[in-house]
Image (cartoon, rainbow, N blue to C red; front, side, top):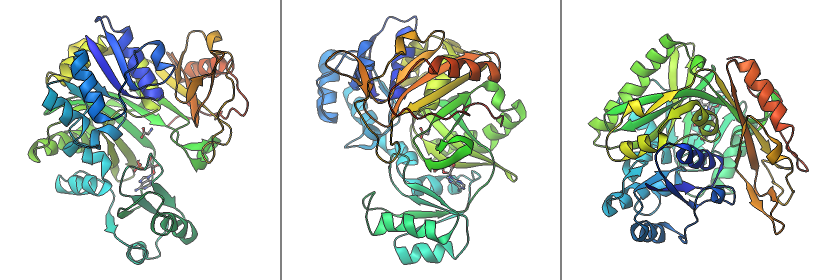
Length: 416
Ligand code: AMP
Ligand code: GLY
């Protein structure tokens, strides 16, 4: 089976690894890929969606897996282009991917299908935003578009809100688009990952990511400094409630709205005093959650994804390990503001009994890996208990070093 994975980060390194380790015979390609990914997958000469499609057709690719979101909504859409070319794609068409690409589309979908979520107003200008906030803090402001996780501000006061609004309307940092002013919700967060094939779905595992740079959830927002996954994170009663109130109505909503869907669907959920409420959808696996969740999946992941992309969700092809999986991110000096690149990384080969997935690395002329981005790499360890997984992940990650390495010391430490 020839599989092409779209993306280049730690999540895609984990996906490529899971496909490669599957019992099915696979030949894996990646676009755009990374030096670490290319130790497992083959490179492609593609530079954009049209050249990627031409490559997949000429190479006889059997399955395309969308790791990252951007190509799902670019040009005619990756899944749409694959459908036209008769190549099964694990990732939804552009129309359904609006659930992630447009926060307003997602909110309207949630309201239309009576899925519990916070109240909101969509605004077009600085004045309208101030009017919608109406002096009530904390408030949550979201730029309505793909902003690589940076278009959200939880504002505790007017100064913070004004700063974000200046980025949107004065500096135009994210381009053109509306802003959502959202009700501030409180509670522990949980992410639920599902595989969806139209009206069929399977809940894979809950996970939690740690978005802030510093210990105790302090400091600036990042792409994620670590993640934890375990089926023990949510009691069966809570999962049943999330399924009944959020997941099932979403799947039924997609059908009612005539939006076919094949791929991973990620539900970002806040467990408020008023019950679980959905914060957002992502039409893909999370990063760094994928790196924590995928090592917990056994069976034939490649066959599972291939069958799913072809329209058949075969739950019997995978099963889940018990225990806890913890993913610890090492970030570069200066992240998230100005990430420094070019620091040589040592110790990767000394890691034992844990996995290393590369997010922002490249090989230098001497063949050593060096930093090339904000989040550099992750170490993932699993164990029967959360405490044992924490100990193992920190022990193994300590073997890896580079100048300016930043890491949280509390990933997985606190219970939720
Ligand atoms: P989003 O990209 O929409 O998930 O937002 C990123 C993060 O901002 C979430 O994981 C939450 O921690 C926080 N957040 C988003 N929406 C809200 C909300 N309505 N109330 C409180 N926090 C929020
Ligand atoms: N970890 C959050 C995300 O992938 O969007």
